[in-house]
Length: 340
Image (tube, rainbow, N blue to C red):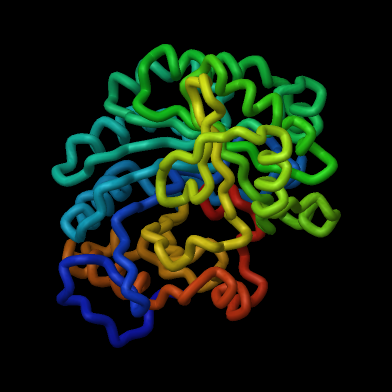
């Protein structure tokens, strides 16, 4: 979809929707390409990725950041694909940090390249990293990702902690009968490492690979298993998505359960998504998309760009279930094409 529907209160100085939500968090996918082929993301052969010419360029990314910063957005997360495959990612981060009103810049990565790039990213001003890791076992890592490298990822996590990033988080997609037997190992990882392990529900953006095979494990069952394994947990506070977050007594780190598919957090959603090919997605589960890239390349004013984004977000469905019911079979069946 190119032209969002109205009517919309574009005079508002914040980005809002019809359900009284305010959007202050922009997730930008800087590419679609990845050096892994995870079972819950894309096929082993890969996908038909967009060309580099059709991908958001550095100046376009930064212009969007500047525009939304004037509309109340203060948190930016860079995702992919694998964002560390993009050679200018450190420059993008450094320039983002310099934008007035941007208070937080984070990045999500699979960790394979992080150890070699972490110091450069830290020097650029990156405050936090989320590292995807679904198993601590080498053979299972290869089974899930179809690539080697679990020790590289673990090394990257420890290196990021050592460098002193403000936030180091591990994203583990929990799959029933596949890796749910590793909950204890991941919680034990928080004993000495000041990290947050996030147990995340499987989502149906796997390019039709494993979603229908019975591997889904809901947040409620995860919580039940965790409480059975660890009867004495300290309930603590986390980010808005970390609805259930705990620490074991005496442990340095913490762990959380993220209801990504259950969608119990929709009422407080504050996220805007921008895909690598320049589409605004106002909900992860919606197929309606709003093509911002032509405005960026057709000499539109900052006000026109800001009004377009506000209009797109005004159309956000009340929750992800409603969005899914309204959606047809969209073109983005893989998470790497949406932005992690």
